[in-house]
Length: 79
Length: 427
Image (cartoon, rainbow over all chains, first blue to last red; front, side, top):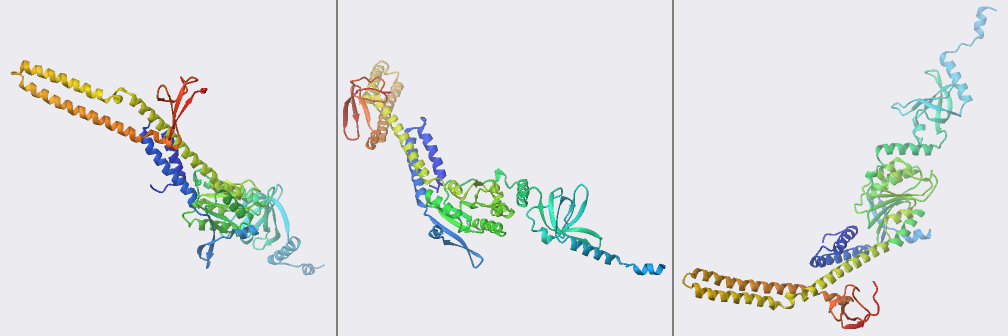
């Protein structure tokens, strides 16, 4: 499956839920949709958990080059 | 008195001399004056100096506003504007014209900053910088957030606090910058440009804590407005709420009244997202269980149907048909044996065709049964669902319709069966 955004995954889930709740589709298709839906739920949960918190500060090295340095939040609280 | 003597007592000036004398008198008398009037016949030639006339109902005064002084003006001088000019009165020797050499101009009625704000707002609005069609969509779940503000102020602390509380796992890149003073606007504009070099930043917050109009001034300056407009990354403007809106607020894709509010806008509460996913999972499962129940009902219905209960019936019927045909065939052979050799052949073919048809039907039935069994509707019982039958009918119950007190029920669980008696039915 192509990497989906959280938002897109949630949108697709909404569509699948609507399909599942409709009377028109067969059991076979329902089960396939359900499986697909569960995969999307796993994607969403992964997206919610995967990123790690990081706070960086953008500094200019030698007056030219941009670089990221870790930002000390503790220092900020102390001030 | 003789004519000669008369002339001796008179001082004769050259034009330059008298002009210089008058100029000195004027300069000594009016080294610093404040004059109010209406600006008219404003002229700004290539040199950048401004020439205009200050007038009221009764008089006019020529004014010159040299570039080195006029460039410090926050707002744009316009004809018809009522204002107070300060400067010195002097005289331009070459034209013999006395005039006011202006140091500074204050608009009458409102402050110069207020006026500058209104002028820039009007200009940028006319250029379409506030056009709603240009506004970019905020990302739903941003992973990387750029922040343009002072690295020591309350603003950055507030933003980080909200993000920590709401959605800790996000990558924040702070581009520290000046947020007040003469050079702040250019610094803010450059910060926005620098963050735009990171293609994976989802959203940028630009802001500072509250302050006076002067403190917030940088956010009302043109370079900031242009940088916000040109940013490829959506921008939330979050300038303290001393005045209603800054120019930056108007250009930004989204406006927040404070830095904390901006942080709240940019990250949805994680808890809510977790809940949304959970409820979606529940919804899907309920829907599919419903479908399975429906399938199970159809299955039991089918099992009870004539054909499935006694598949042999069909076979028997076909066999009987065949017997009949056989019989008729034999009679036919006896009767028309001589003349109808050809027909006999045809009927033999028919018989083998019938057997083939029978075989196909049988295997089709087997397939349907196998498929229905494969779906294994009772499998959901292992997840805690149960099926309840009326003992007398052996039919899965869908409704309390027709149930009476005292009816015996059989509830099938994944492991075991409960026999119970109806006490009361509610709809």
